[in-house]
Length: 311
Length: 234
Image (cartoon, rainbow over the protein chains, first blue to last red):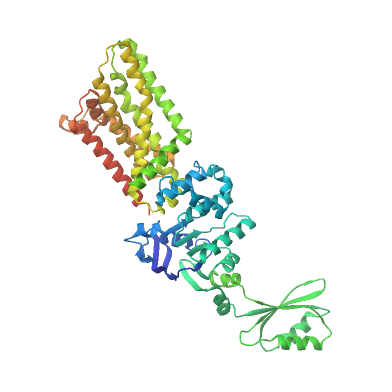
């Protein structure tokens, strides 16, 4: 559905996006992740035709963005960051304006406006000026604006920023619902959101793609390292270190600050071997009391930190 | 074209949903009304020459105030991005906003129709120059609106947009008088560039194509410059 090839954008001499390439398939929800200033918004702005790339190609559906921008815009809904809308306009007037520009008849299609309003939960604020709405409602009006003509491609720039937890869940729900049939690209820096919503994530750092794979695969390949958390009572740190560090498969052993006299340890494991059985056997032979023993796979958050570490 | 109309209608309505329209119209009527009637009874002539004589200078102040928000506000709140990612062309946006500004200037002139009506009641009014004057006023307003639109497309600050627009319109109005010290051949060129000269020709009741072409040229140059300014924002 969307093909991006070697997309590059310079602001004067600063390279904001550096030869990015990716594809998005029909019916896929793609999350664009990255720290602040990584080039997410710039990428999305080029994708929607608002900014012209310095070089590179973008194709949406059968259309190329240089020559057939208008055709692309007809089938693309876009919610810019922080939903900038006309403050003086009433929500209903604004949506009618959008519907009319989208060629849905003079005065807009009132049934469709109500339907979208329902979906985004803004029917109760239809007759209020946009400037008087709270951030969350404004965000939803922006979402309604983007979805007005039921576009094939939906591009959302940080759609959940500034929303309360309930609203975030609702918006994610909406995105997932739309994403079943449509193509959705959205940017975020909240990782749990990407984990919960996306089929695939692309991590951008300093304008470059540093990871591009499905959420599950990303965890598998990059997060192969497991960590084992142990809490032991009645044990000496030195003795524990001596006993457990020697177990095959333990790469590193870290002693955390004790809580209520219980010793807390984090063991980083090698990918090839699972040391859990032997660890347990060894602990059983001592007179320590095992309070906690659990394994954690590196989460998206850790992967993200790993990939976007400075230096 | 349909898109331009839609944007134009939205912008025109936006004028009247914010206090800006009422403030600008009130100030315009106050200033023109005072300058016109303060000398009207002294001169004791049943014509509107005084009203139309001052109009270019007053427009040079008022029209940039009307147009200053058209792009600057969009840049400031960021709605420019939402607007341009809708299926519209640059030219739809520019023409729509321009049409709204011209329509607003025309709406601003409507209350002043009370002046010729009042004057006609007091003496024998020659309607020819009055009609010419109003036609000229709309052309003049359109030319200044195009200039103001360009000024608005340069910046995200409405006050800066206003001052730039004012400076250009003011210069355009009085450029012939500013050039009085130049050799006659050069000052003739400047007098052809002056909006005031062309407007006064029309306001005499002589609707000459040369004057109309002048105003249409200013409109075109202003709108084209706006187009270039928007393109350069990338």
